[in-house]
Image 1 (cartoon, rainbow, N blue to C red):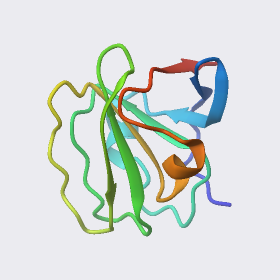
Image 2 (image 1 turned 120 degrees about the horizontal axis):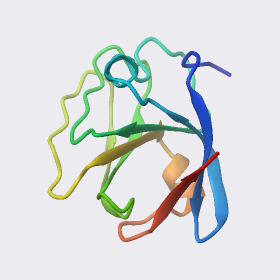
Image 3 (image 1 turned 90 degrees about the vertical axis):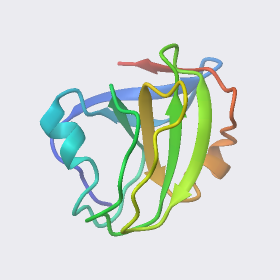
Image 4 (image 1 turned 135 degrees about the horizontal axis):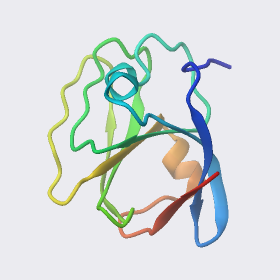
Length: 117
C-alpha cells in the first residue's frame, strides 16, 4: 500500500456510513502534489478549493468526484494518467481515489458527503 505523505487524516462519510479513510490536502503545496508519484493508493484524497485536476505524474487511473460547497457530488469522471481535466460547474472540492473505488463505494452524483476526523 502506498502513502501520499503526512496529511491530516479524516473519514469520508455518506449518510453517516464511512466510505473510506481520507487525506485532506489543506494547503496549496499539498493540493499541487496530490497523488503525483504515488504507486498505489487506498482511501480518498480530498482537495478543498479545487475545481479541476490533472493526472500528469500520477501512475494509475483515478476516480474523480467534484463536490459543491456543501460536499454534494455534482459530477464524477475516471481519468487515466497524463490527462488534463476540466472544471465542473459548481465544483469547489475534488475527491480522488483509485479507479474502481467509487463503484465499490456506490458513490453517485447527488450523494451528500461529509468529512470527519
